[in-house]
Length: 402
Image (cartoon, rainbow, N blue to C red; front, side, top):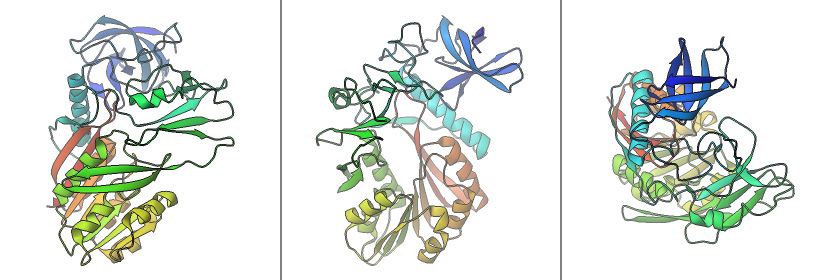
């Protein structure tokens, strides 16, 4: 801890770092780019550990893809507490083109390692940001012991008070959240939902319940309005929900009379338009573990008899899912993925097409391997840059019988 090493930086790794080696030991180094030579300070690990973690504190030989970060808080911690140290952005020091190439490399590596598939997929932009900035419509700020709102350094529970956040939409910072005293609260959420007023929602202490906001989505000739808690799950990039919904509907092409499953359904982003597509002669079963999100999905869906929203963990509703059956399936699980049990239960229904929406390419690649074992094949894989400046990437895989 604290030792400085001069390192030649190798390939990108999954998690917002690049990989180097020192005296035979692997070092995961943040704030670097492949091909650079840097001086890095060890932040975790020792000589007996499998790997070390480190921050680049000096760039000895920079990459041609290196640029000056847009935010003063991006980068490694410095002696100046107002500069560096925020763990929210991994790649602000790289051009947007280079960021997407790094993410594409990570996706390809995960599918090669976990699914045994050789793929090459570009990472596509999502409309609605400003050259990779000004896209985050929902931000949860932590609150420090002095009541100041901030964000956390990488792999840390401490709070870094900040004065700006260029990846957030302007309304977030303009709400005054960074200037107010939040003593007595553990966190504060800021939600800028479309053209509605910005909601500033304290968390913990004597905070009131979070308000319900309305999110609108228009894609492929379909328009819907969704109720969602200000602290509930919704895509944070303003163009993400419409982009993903349009992609899924195009890929599945649900037909009148078909049975559709929407697993990990949230507030019904996919379930509601699926219900319109399959019509009264078909049926939609949406399964969601969060009771409030399920309640909002029911409210958005209305009263059609061919739509059913079930509250419960997907793993605990497999008998209900099996009884419903499926011609088409949407999976949009949390970062940990669906897992073998859910994948096998779903494949046993023999759907003609599955659209798997994933925020972690490693979990998606692992679950794709389960699908391959079950007689399905990967028909298409598309990656979207729904989280510019960070290492996160959204992927949509379409699986069909092999």
